[in-house]
Amino acid sequence: MKAILLGFALSAMAAQAFAQTPAPETPAPRALAPLQLEGSAAPQPWQRYRDWNQAHWDSYNSLARPNVTPPAGGEIEVKEVTGDAVTGRKLAFDRSRGGGCLACHVMGSSTQEVPGNVGPDLSEIGKAGRSDQWLFNYVFDPRVYNPQSVMPPWGKHGFYNEAEIRDIVAFLKTLKTPATFADPLDNPATRPRPVEDRDFLDPFVNPAADHIDSGSALFKKPGPNGKACSDCHAAPATSFKRWAAEMPKWEPRLNKVLGAEEFIARHAKATMNADYLMQSAANTDLSIYLHSLANGEPIKVDLSLPAAQAAYDRGVKLSQLKIGQFDFSCADCHGQGANKWLRGQWLGEPRGQFDHFPVWRTSRNEIWDIRKRFQWCNVQVRADELPPDAVEYGELELYLRKMNEGLKMAAPNIRH
Image (cartoon, rainbow, N blue to C red):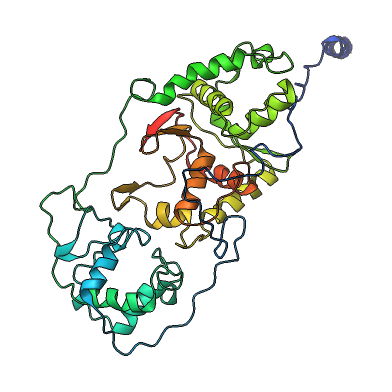
């Protein structure tokens, strides 16, 4: 009995001691960063960059208007093609007509320049047993036979008229001899894939690296209301070590995916009353600086919220949407066409396309964020681009970032 009473006493003492021990505090929810929630984060009204193609292609799909492009028609009946093969060769090799056939095809011994290999080698198409009707229709609109073809509807979308396509088919029928290349660099089958090994943090090599210091200075500069980024973030190397590697994120207050550059614009306006609109010099410098702080950190995308997962799923579909006069999707170039040559341009897989932005583009002598890259791709396939803060670009960015998850941040980098 004494043992039992002693046990109860010890239990009571333990309970009292436990009650007197303060319970561990539940971490307070992290405060939401102030954001300007109204209006656009991009210049308004949106206008395309002055030195880009200024044509508009309202008759074809864009990422925001996915149901505009006319569907493929039925097969056109052609008994026999009679055309001028010499004219057809000129048309096929003419780069002003959407890049020409050599962008994707080797075309026999007369192949000029540096051809691509996204499409099959056509050097012996003339003895492949294809009917004139098949050849004509495949050039006019390959979707008649293959709805997922990565070949543009050359006739249906107005690149060539029917008479010109007859000339091209007449030329194709003459191709019966394999191509030979004196220089292996001209042959897309033997041309080595490019390897980027330049020191991207050397400003003598990469002009974008100079903007790390510019961004750092801007981080400490007071805005119109006298406040600076550094007032709240005294140790950015620590507090922003992973920030850029975890962007973009779903932002419920805006009901959209928020990328780094749009966050900078909206946060700067809300906290400093500063107009650092997307793709402005200030926005770009801050983006470069904040991305550089995350260099070496693995990319991680948060899809834990159902809304974020839904946005990612929409981004996947956007990457598969055929747009523009060329009727291309992201997946056409970086899926079916991945690890191949488009003339002299290497088409990479989605993985590896988004660990190095913002990037210095040597072909343009400009710094681009990922949204400007999206816009460029749109215009290059002759589709109307969207403003940089477009919902569709955010969802496409989330998808692409997920494809690069685990890769280490290396920005600002340098690419052709």
